[in-house]
Length: 336
Image (cartoon, rainbow, N blue to C red; front, side, top):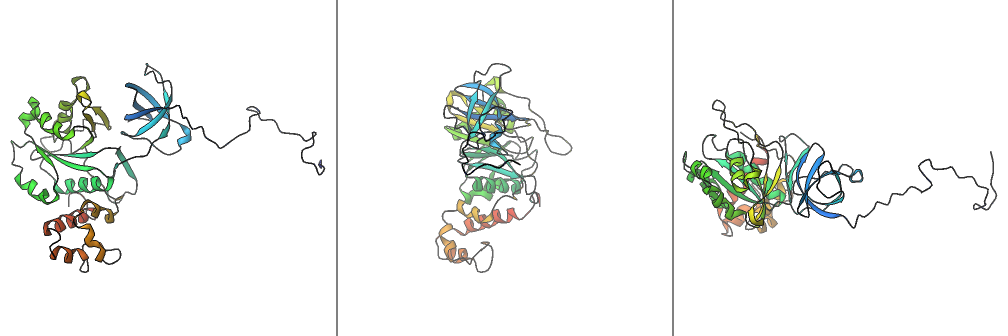
């Protein structure tokens, strides 16, 4: 074995050649400062459709992003062919910070969370008043996910010609949630779109709901005709609808008034990812009362400081009841 002298820089030291060239390897990633800004509109089997400078561009995630996935609503940095021409493929090299995240799990026992949409301002919970029957526990779960993810909830109640909305609205009156009530006739003639559009102006709104409640019909009425898609029907035997949306899709409202994100119909909304201690943030009138709560208080136990806070007149008792109902939803399976 050859031994070298004290000088490690002598000229006769042999250097193993690099088969891929003589450029040394580096862990420094390019900054892509010239990358264009885009918004993810939909994701399909590893291909992401993005809006970049007014053009629809198909892209794939760069390997350097690792396991980090981009979802509908994400603001991303894109490089490569940004022409949007057929058979071209760009590359997403950076996912910008998110202002909000709507997440869910398959059920309460599933530790794997799924990000449904990013950067949405509000969550429109579409519920039929009949055919299929409303499921308040499902609405509660969507509310918890909205509050946890930083989205403002909006109730959209459809098919008011089949059942009155009063009883359902009474359940949520103390939460001060904005709502819109529509009928099947208004969905068909387009009047429902006008009622809902007033709540969407200038916002990114994610729509969620069971199949068959009229969600996709409403979204189709809100967006230009060329973006409309097939609408399913409720199964007369099971009362459930056929899924007509297979992946989340962001659609621009006319005149740049905002964005609608249509999501697949859901049959359950797991909350395994939600920390119950964060739900209190949706109740600013109750939150100061938690200062006298014992450590790790569940806000539904004998020593909870909120009971005294409400008894002293700082908040309405109905608000505390609503908080505890939502917290109980985290511990209860949907449909119970």
